[in-house]
Image (cartoon, rainbow, N blue to C red):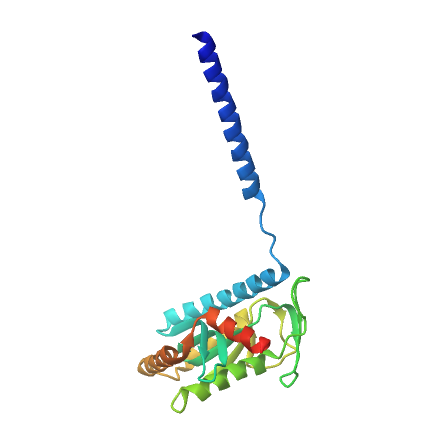
Length: 228
């Protein structure tokens, strides 16, 4: 009898040891974390900057009876797509916003094809394309598709992490804090009444209903364009 009990106890000990071993192995696999690539870090950093700006304009919109949109992507009938980082509609105007997450000192002329901006070592070219021209391209595409009667659009380029943008010398280009000041000053002027702001928002909603696409579809359009 005791021999049988001893055998059973020994078997239970072996089973427990095997179970613990499997658990440890599973834990070790869970402990192997994914090291993000340079591209993943770059995209995450850029998205963080975009969302930081969007939170700011959303707060302004909420305080002033306006509307804010993030990552507005659309595609025309020829298959060409564009994505706008943020749109703010308020009594101060209809703002199309391009966000650049570069750090440090930003330099570049409004007519230059390339600007210089500080980036982390793992990020891409430190000489990005002129963001003023880039955002104007978004605006031109939007206006062409929307047709006559669409609101006047104010272009804004915001560097939320920049330490100095003085060399750019443009009312279009701002850091995080000067962008807030600029927008709030425009709101203080009270150019548009609430009924007009609501109408602008309905126009944008109608446009998005017809031409709007997801971020994923926009990325597919880009890949197809460059692969063609």
